[in-house]
Amino acid sequence: MTASHLFFIIILILTLATLIILHSHVSLNLTDYKSRITAQAAAGGGGLVGSLRGFVMEGEGGSAGLWGQPAADSDKEREEGGGGSKGKDAAHNLSNMKPHRSGKKSSATLLCPTMTSPSDVKNQADMVYWEDLPNDHRPSNIVSPNKYVTFEPDHGGWNNIRMSMETMLAFAVATGRTLVIPPKKTMYLLGNDKDNKENNQLDFSDFFDLEAMAAETEGFNVMEMKDFLELEGGKLLPFGEDGPVGDTPTKLPGGITDWSEVFRKKPLEEYLRTVGLHRKFDTVRSMIIIPSDLSKSSPSDLSYLTDTLSTPSDWGKDSQKYFSSPTSTRSSASDRFAEFRAGRSSYHVYDQTIHSAKMIHFAAGDGYRMLTHFYTMLFFEDPLMDRWTKRFVRDHVRYRDEMYCVAAKVVGRVREISRNNGDEGEYDSMHIRRGDFQYKTTRVDADVLYSNTKSHLKEGGTIYVATDERDKSFFNPLREKGNYNLVFLDDFMSDEDVANLNPNFYGMLDQLIATRGRNFYGTFFSTFTGYINRMRGYHDDLFDERNGQSNDGAIDSWYFAPKDKEEEMSKYMPIRPPFYSREYPVAWRDIDE
Image (tube, rainbow, N blue to C red; front, side, top):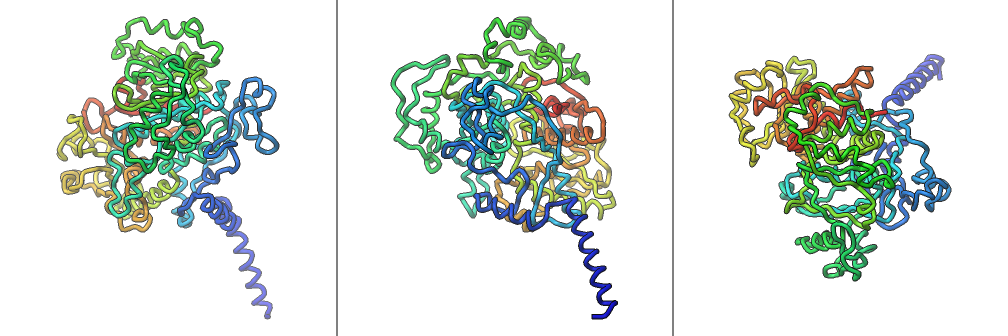
């Protein structure tokens, strides 16, 4: 070997070493990453997608089918460090919690194995709005070992189902109860896979990584309905609104524990309504108050809040003092309650009576529908718990990484189209709901659509359009009058990553791509638009926090109709009924410690 050859080899080795070191700043070591993905797949995760949140701890929960980290059996055990966990498992037990603190943040990560180019890595990072807060312990002292929350999925479309499910999740984690997930079923408007009918049988774990959610959150447990019925079915007494109404356990219908293959699930729902505490929670006129301390949850303890509800409120007028002037998230319960009230006069308190119930059941339909946001239904007396719950939803209750990875790929393609269109890789986005939408004031023709949106859209720019309109020629006036370069999800169906995705996830994919638009126009009353705006709010809050800027909750989003709603999202607005019609900045503004 000549000296020149040796010199060349040394230079090559040094260059490779430098590249490896640089690459470590943007991704995990590939060998380690592959081993993690392999481990995840072996555990049942499958797929081509992984993230730091997806590597679920094993052996937690202590019973079959239970995912999560159990709370201690009593307040005494919490104080003494008991609760049944030994050794390394004790670190994940609520009994060993230190006083609440957020701790040092570390950057959350989205890892997509098939996306490794620098632009791919950038697009992945740009999808992330959640934060990794390893010491963000649940501050509540309310624990409910061996108690449950069951619920029926909303009967509407996916985003109504998701919104109701978020409220169930938040209620369960707030009260320390195990959340029981309903069995698989075909959800309304989600039967889109004509080739593989099995893809149309869905439960919430298909959309959210519930195992990771439970593993990452102390005191939060999730259980499948089958496991719950095997454990408790046929043992529960009939229960009324305030306590047991009999002393003979109610039989499980047909003795069935696995309802995933049973088409008609009405008997199961009737059984759950019989054995669970089952109340009508009016989501427009009422609220649920979560006290700071169960021992101080009596009417007299909370009268300083509830007595104010007897005073008539004209919220249309009273709410105006909060326009662009939000109540601090660190304010007293009285001050926060004054804004949270939103004209309501009725309430429920999570008191000792409700807490005593072995199981609480939330029905759907027949006046029981939970069509509301978790943050408009649940009032936390403790501001720490209020902010923590909102962080829990932001950081953990999100679509599976598979969807984010495919969205990142499409976002990269849209940005490439934008660059080729002379728009520096930026694009605007829209959600135009057509189809069967019941709110006719939002159904406008394309000429009106152009007129109502042109003030915040760049003429000649690239616009990603999320829509259920099948005839894309409907949008021709936007192309002609605004010279817009319109792109749709349909334009990317030939991409392998999109083609391999369950077609029932295309709506979620549309949402994620739309969140990264520079400016966004949505459909008022649409919960599909609402979730896009909430995710945009999360992104904005993270950006402002990293850049040392204050956040008033306003985002670069508008509504194309009704015209008087156009500027709703561009300034802080307090919550108001009907709460489902839009999302509100209280969900994302100033919720970190």
